[in-house]
Image (cartoon, rainbow, N blue to C red; front, side, top):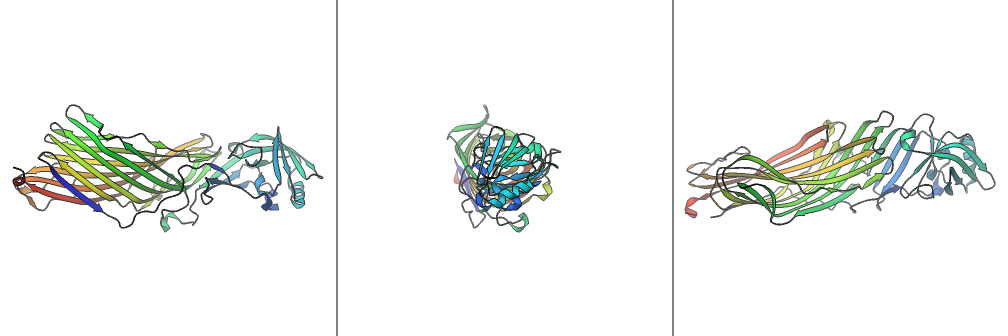
Length: 455
């Protein structure tokens, strides 16, 4: 005999549009027209801004603001209109084709040095996608050729900065989290999918229990952007937040084989995570996103049975603002589930099988080549709670906890199958805090099969 309940819950009316345009992005200094430099940029400053492009989309970029230590002002050479910058041994040569700019350098740059020159990869001073920082010990000028020769030594951000602020892949519209979310903001976009081969044993406890995968697929698409504020001197994080737009598509078909009674137990199987290295601002910050998935079940049975479940789940519109520094500032919207769920049993039995799907977006940060390390993100856990109960003439009830509403009619000498949905979204910072930021429970189906149909 086979009893089957098919439940559908279409709980939203719109499906998210496609996110982003690229899987992985290289990061490099933003291209600058050397002819657009202004004379004021020749003045050494302790407050500088560096722009980076993430991949080919010029709308997706990062800005690094650096407050330098007292006595360590800097000049960003790509912003002064220099015709050419070259490096040889311990010397940085800056060639000008604008007389006013050359004359301004004579006035603003002390001959004895005492400031920092910042180059980019457009010349021969630095590796591809990198900038260089050079501490100036002394200067010399060639008035006829309009060339400045700076005698330098290489330094780095950690040595000269007091603090750094990074806006990566920022929302160009300038929306604050409280003003709402959209799924097409400029940001770093990643997507991946993973599947489990059919007939794979995902977990077992021989000889009384095993679970096989009849078809398991996960697909994730995420766009994120955010802000970092870090005190270099004290090695303290002053602020860090991410805005994450996420879409999940999954299908999980499992067969549970019970050879006898089994008390309440939880099982989980996790495919290998998919990791990326999509945002690397050399020597300043690296962000490594990862997708992690898990399938599992909470089970409880009083009888032998073979139970098959199938969950097709789409979460098209999940948006969350995660504040790593203050969990109280985390905000969420969307996360509306579209669900198809099927459960079937070969025997009349008292069984509870609650399969679940976990999907995690993990963001790992490395600041100043390991001076500070942090990870956090968001996890969506969807559980379909299924109760199969062989009953006499009585009001419908489950055999274990977990159902979200009470039966209100009578199932006469038959089999009662009931299903409900629970969705929980957690935000977390690894080793610091984890909060449930959203949860919902939705009844999705109930059927009674009388014994006269099968006996």
